[in-house]
Every structure is written in structure tokens, then in C-alpha cells.
Image (tube, rainbow, N blue to C red):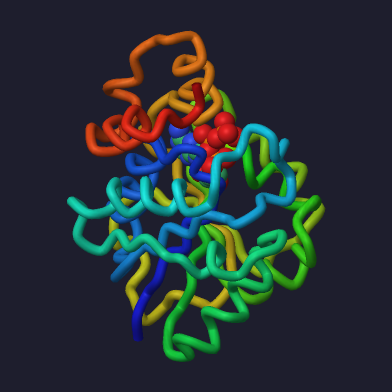
Amino acid sequence: MTLTGLFGGTFNPIHRGHLRAAEEVRKYLPLDRILFIPSYIPPHKDQKEVVSAWHRLRMVEIACKPHAGFIASDLEVKNPGPSYSIVTLKRLKKLYPQDLFFFIVGSDAFLEIETWKDYARLIQECSFVIVKRPGWALEQLNKVIEKIKPERVVEMIKKAEIKTENYTRTGLYLIDIDGLNISSSEIRRRLQAGLPVDGLVPPGVEEYILKNHLYY
Ligand code: ATP
Ligand code: MG
């Protein structure tokens, strides 16, 4: 059985906060791989600010390369139209019927889960790993969790607390990670203002942004 993490996002651009979140998740859950899946059209974002899906995918590829088990996925990018997680998950289940899927999201994103297409089905189709994003305490999620009634909630404390054979197909895993306070919006703002972004994105991504004059 393969344990596969799914990390979806606009990744406009991918930054060190995303990478840190994925690294931290692997300290708690023995995921065999994490697919980073840039959306083609993010349903909830202002499209004017979003650069081409191919640029975003390329930056994800550059960022994932040094990390074993981090894989850039073109699944949404090559399926034009709004990208819905429920559709992506169904495709992945067909492609990899033996896998157990863990959908990774930041606490800010999970607060809005009720706006996602078919969210009630989505939480019955895979597990969710919710990582704390600086500024969005996990306690803030209590109301949403009460409302959506997941099958089970596990607050992860230490690595391998749960044995692999006991992972279930659904459930919420809450992880209080040591995250980085970085956002793509802040990076775009800095680039527009002519400020440097080194330290916020991996060096190869910074190079790609500057070479292609993205965001400014
Ligand atoms: P934007 O500012 O444009 O919204 P972002 O930095 O929030 O960009 P997204 O592509 O929107 O990045 O996020 C994709 C996923 O990564 C979401 O689940 C989000 O919660 C999570 N995420 C983004 N940044 C962080 C971070 N610094 N720490 C933890 N999770 C993060
Ligand atoms: Mg965001």
C-alpha cells in the first residue's frame, strides 16, 4: 500500500512555506510521496493575478527536484477549466487504485472547506492533513469540524504514533507544525515593489521568476 500525500494549491508562486509544510507532514506521517498539484484555474482566486499554469508547474518542478518523494504533478494543469479537488481525487483513485490518499492543506484553507465543490463527499473519499499556518491557530477550526462531522479526528503529536496498518481511508489529522510565515501574495507584492524575494522561495524558483519577468 502506498501512502500518497496530495498538496494542491495555486502555487503562484510556490514558496518555502509550502515546502516546510510538506517536510513537517512527513515527520508525522510516513507518506511514501507527496504530489504537488498546481491548479489550472483556481476556483476561488482573482484570475488577473494568477500567472500561466505552465509557469506555476515549472516552478513547482524546480522546487520539488531536490526533495526525494516530492513530485510535481501536471494532473490539473493538463485538464483545462476550473480545478476541483473532488475531480482530481477521482482521477487519482483511478490511476492509483491501491493508494491511500492524504490531502494536505493549511489551516487557513481548511477554514473555507465548505466553499469547496462537493466537500462533504471529498472528506469521505480521503483523509485530510491540516497543518497550522502561522496566524491561523488550529483551534479556529473547531467550529468547522463540528459542522462537517468527519469520521474521526486525530491530533498528531509525534511521529508514527499510528501504525501504518491502522490508517483509515478518511479522517482529519491535525498537525501543529513549526511553519514559516510566507505567502505567495506577499512574494508578488514584493516583486511588484522591486524588493528581493531570496529566502522566501528556493533559489531556482527566484531565478525562474526573474528570468521570465513574472509578477512585475
Ligand atoms: P496566496 O497568498 O496567493 O493565497 P498562498 O501562500 O496562500 O498564496 P496557496 O497556493 O494559496 O499559497 O496555498 C496552497 C496550500 O498551501 C493551501 O492549503 C495553504 O493553506 C497552504 N499554505 C500556503 N502557505 C503556507 C504556509 N506558509 N504554511 C503552511 N501552509 C501553507
Ligand atoms: Mg492562499
